[in-house]
Image 1 (cartoon, rainbow, N blue to C red):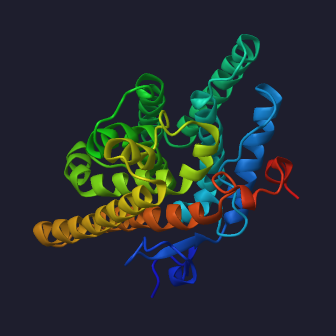
Image 2 (cartoon, helix red, strand yellow; image 1 turned 180 degrees about the vertical axis):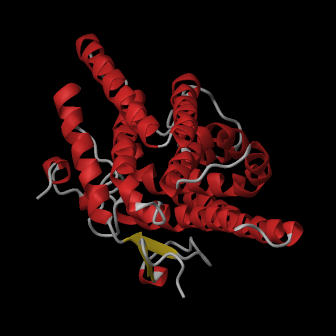
Image 3 (cartoon, one colour; image 1 turned 30 degrees about the vertical axis):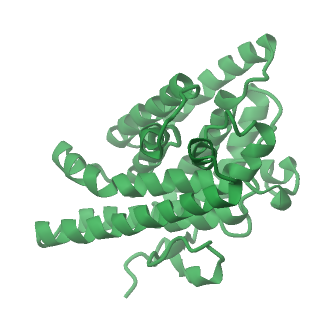
Length: 316
């Protein structure tokens, strides 16, 4: 019996060309995906109302699945719309942080609107689940501070880069949203013990983001300054793009395997584990497969799948 059939369906991951990634991972898609789309649409409408015109794509993917629907398929339906709203805002906010072409006037307007919508997100999260919301607020702040502070660092190794990128890409932030969606909180002891287990998951997520967003980012930024693991490997090892991509692909596979190994090791050492921790680990594995399949053809990374910003801004 499928214990998660109430919220999501299993999807055959072999249907997708995953570039050799996601081996031995299962994929799920949320049954209430329309709520995730609604959350994205509302966030985009509020962005236009309070900040300005939309120039970026977020979590919508009407082919392989909304980001929230495939990355967080175990989320409680009553919390999915809010999570998708927060993630959409975070996607758009991230693009603003990385932009260097804003005028002083538009920057002032954007800052006021960003502050308003950020505070609205945190308020709604706190009203729903105060314990989980506090962790979301902390990890979100850490991600923003890391992006702002370290985006001009000259990284000398992938290992150094990952220390930055795992936070910058929002992996702990999405984990906190996942816990909120599950209505689950971890004790400090559980958090500490599981930190070692999920570290390779965070690394795989960060590098997968780089691997699939590289082509789009390369069109916008010179590779000599691009903060992406593919570009960093190119610079450090003096490699061409295909070779650097192959190295990152193999590195992702290594971290994916290591994550599954650490889950097995944890279960063996701890003996029978609680249903809560079992569900937590299962949910984290779906982040790997969901992020991978979403990245394959999401409009955010793939110009060939862009169908007009307005199509993802409003419900049709």
